[in-house]
Image (cartoon, rainbow, N blue to C red; front, side, top):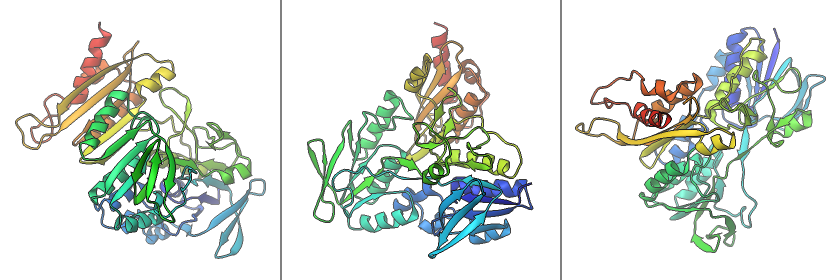
Length: 448
């Protein structure tokens, strides 16, 4: 069994690696290194602190320092790894100006990703922020106290969640997306437009197919130029995605994947160099449906990858069969979620599809408090195998995404999903489950 396991990065992936490694090998020495000053915390919760729905950024910290002591994990914070020598199995760290060489038997790289800020003119002015860390959140929170207008660049999950936070603070908000759809990697045109209308109904201006050209102001941002439009802004939030932190991986000579933008790993999370594993936002994934390499920079993906990497780094055995990038969020009083692939992604992979869509309610029509829910089921046409779902509703979206994720993982057909033995009671659910009803509509298309 390896005597010393060293993990670089301590968030969703890194902390999962450490926990899984300790459960697999009680005797291993585990060293967890992170350049940040906080123990592992939930990045996904940052927008909800800004919205006032979570009291403090400190509430996001997942594990107190005592957890690491109990698990016998040597946590080194505010420590930068400057080099890895894979032949000697050593790495060099820097802490408080002091350098140290640390030996390892197995190494796990979980360095995550960083916010991508497009280098447009004015991007470095005061009032322009990305949201990735607690430090970012603190800065934005202070700026929000003085802001009356804001522009969010990007209409992915993080952009919509930040827009929700801004609206909750009575800040006039515009969302700008370069692509013609909101959430284009998760939703098809019909569902995306459904989401867009709900957001616009909350008073948010949405500009799609528009590109940020310039940020203006003396030292502080005052307006942004979107195409030919000038938008006043006290705040500009860049929600334009993240880029994997792979500098160390490149220096070490690890093989990269997906356009040389991310670390290539196999199903055991092994890199191209023996004894080095990787997990989280810095690594490539494999799509469960198409079998193609992909990038899945989600906390849930990172946790699953981290568990596999931790078990294998401790000389256990585990594999990750693929990812569906199942995701859900809540903003503006409603929830959106999806799993699997969209119609467009299926077409690009050479799959012909059928769909079933309907709008229902989360409770019977006579029960107070019922909320609207729209479900779309996507299936491969020849056999009717479920390959994805897209769901938007006032409540109970998460468990329906989980339900359809299991259907995809078990390669169920829409015929089987339509016959799901679901539960019912007026306070909690309809007699006919909306997922089953949407599947019935897809079945009808197969039978034509």
